[in-house]
Length: 418
Image (tube, one colour):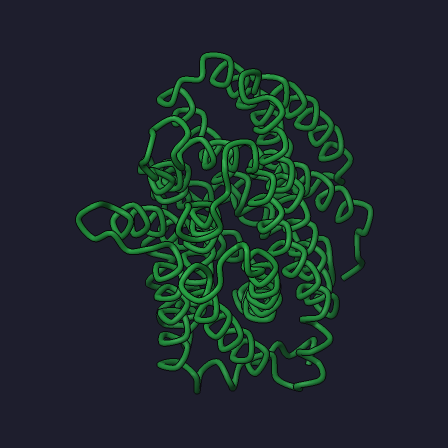
């Protein structure tokens, strides 16, 4: 297969700008949800759940469409839809309406749900199998770079434009338009399975594909591992925002930038880890060993985060310690996730990759939805669990599931890259 590197670069650019827009808007809302709109209440979990819900409901249909039609066409149309969603986002910020913000979050999730299966499923159509691991490292790196910039800017923008949030909203519209023009530069691609039927159910052939994956020697368990990573990441992200509370890092009004910097540290570490993951996987011979190394690293880092507030305060250097711990968690997370993502692209047969990633999207965002529900529940007055304990328990859930499947993971191979 000949690599279409120009189209791959266009894909990378378009998804980078989309990740930036999604994360800037979502992070602004998470800051608003953590004691800003609702005084002394943390309702980040509701925003997380609303954003994830469209992925849970529509990922099956999105996967079927990605096989029935050209993935390039779907990618371009979803970038057009992103412009409309950002326009509504500006209105939501002008009104400072919590309910309207939730509506826009839902529409953002809907647009991304249809974008995801085509974005990941198209990579093997553009890049030969001997370059898949490297291509996935590039996609992961630029995705988290978009996450980094979106989260990094959210705090400063909230501090600077807390009464004029429509200003950054206008910038998001422009960025969405630029991303659309970049996506247009992708070469036209033929549908992989034009005979694919489209079910009237939004779940499409999702549950049938899940049944197929469960028969493929543990492939579905890799989907579950990948999804647990996103559950854990969702909990960690919410916990970082909650570290601003007085009993942890005591971040006051006008200091949200400090929390954005913590999110930046996490994202930079994931970017560096994404660069290093293919190299370390080659060095360890089997990529499954890299996954195990990453899971242990995440769990130990999240255990160490319990020291913030309980052992060391902001005045004693707690903010710098938090940066160091989050850097370790992020780097370890990349070690964990890049080989799994690559395997999920490599293992399914031709004509099933889009549907596999539809299942993957469905499970990922089901678990992100559950991360929102989990965090909303454990932070409720009835349970009253602190953010550091919430994220530590999530990290050990990932490690526990990995230990149950350690034999399967240890023997995982990606034959063309080994």
